[in-house]
Figure: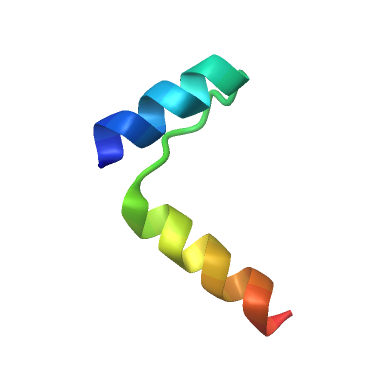
Length: 33
């Protein structure tokens, strides 16, 4: 899962490290605010 996220991020030009953990928190923060 994390490997796929990193590959997609690289293709999109995102240079920060991504993980399923980070994505989950980002999603939760978006819903709250």
